[in-house]
Length: 223
Ligand SMILES: [Zn+2]
Image 1 (cartoon, helix red, strand yellow):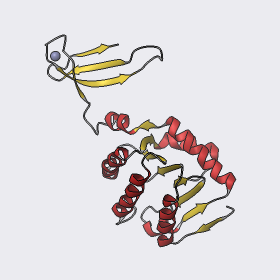
Image 2 (cartoon, helix red, strand yellow; image 1 turned 60 degrees about the horizontal axis):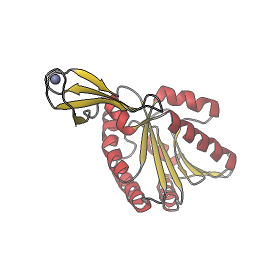
Image 3 (cartoon, protein in one colour; image 1 turned 135 degrees about the vertical axis):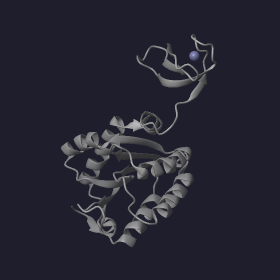
């Protein structure tokens, strides 16, 4: 890979920090892991959050997390952190691992986390043994070569198009309770209902809303 170099773990973290600090337009982070990679992961997350807060309204920040089912404790931990990031202005998506693999294959891109910041890519490669945490970090690579960066930029766009926004994903995965809305049940007259679905089916029509009564469970829809 042209114009790239190997970094040690402390260099990787320093490089990541300086990349984030120089962000002017766009930051995209792909999270491929579903396990903790570092004891101080929380510190890294906090430092990212402080960058994000300082970018508010200036830098577009997007994240995609690749997940496998069943979801594990790590994904639950990350979801709490992501809610905080979403409040700070980040757009967050989830994508199923097998779908991600299908999208990745034609690009020839290796399996790795990447951070895309305004035309520079920072990679974290994983070794087959997922317990080798230190080696994962030491395999971080900074990519400036234009053709390679373009491949990652294209993959990033493809992933965003095919991924599911966080709220919808967490709801479908049963990680959050559906929203409760004021809607009178035609069967029992109860005035609270879960919103099971809200969305536009065809562009020119009003959104479809599907309610489920919180008392008797009756399901009805409204266009
Ligand atoms: Zn009812």
